[in-house]
Length: 448
Image (cartoon, rainbow, N blue to C red; front, side):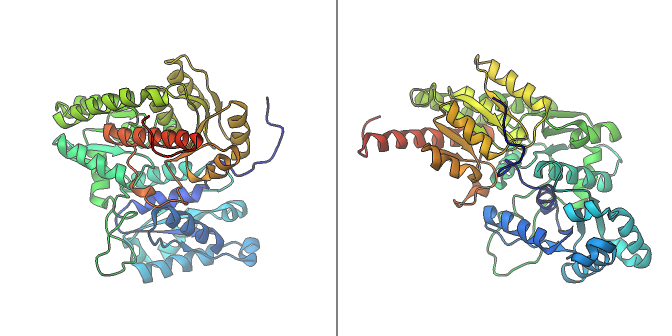
């Protein structure tokens, strides 16, 4: 049945400039300035710190009604001056918002004028990116920012044996695990962006306006000299693929893979790593794979045939769909607030392995997800905290994964990827369903 409403109710996505803030947060010494009203930067700070539980500074050009009529060039120039004076960033990302896109401010031209007026600002890499909130999602802003960073900073010279890793927007724990994997493969890896420290920091006795960590500018420069690129991104077009950009401009071979969640996706990732590094898969990961298979057998009787709704970012939903099929759960609804034909095709191909035909929703909102969950008799939800109200309304459990997780702590420390992360998700999912069954029985502990 077609959706009758022509409006969006609680979209299953976040706004585009938020993705830019997240991407630049993974660059060493970087700061972000949003060209728009103060409310935009306040919203971004709240939404990022609510998940990561870290202080996040995001500057604003602070436009008012006057600038909405006459243009915000003066505010943007002064905002850049203020950020440079207060934070002394090495990289400054300047992202647009709905307001400045609507009035037509050309931030590239405004920045160029400022650099002519004040040449000393050329010492800072000021990188503009167009992120209108009314078009696309936070993942569009994230990927567009990564492209803008590479276009500005990647420098082709003599080749190295390093591997570029473009993981997309995954957790800080996932990034740390990727670093471990590259160390075990005895191959240098360049991860862009790297939020493992900047959005999951430590208490070291003092507050720093710009936290340590992130991908360094010299490392970004070397991405144009690496042996190859591996990117967790199979849904976005080539124009939003970091691997595709480096392949077309600098002849760096690229592999675009699904996020390695689930046994099949993890196998593909480790096989690809073995191929491009010319190294065998380390014994510890073979053991982790075997342990995961054993756990899948143990959990099968609790999971088989359960109906699930999975929602979130398109590539993340695709990976979770593969995971669910691996463990015997039927993903009856697969939903994303962005998505495209490739998303629909990939979900269909993944589900066809198990003879399943899920309802696939793109450009959707939580109102429609709720209705389809009810119609399909779904027994659980898998996705961010934004689905909490659906779970409560339908009386079914929610496995919180991905972003944002605002009503629990530790979202930044959730490990999703690899055999280890898949095991983590499997245990959480199985125990959630066991607890649910125990609650319905009316008594606590029993042999299950």
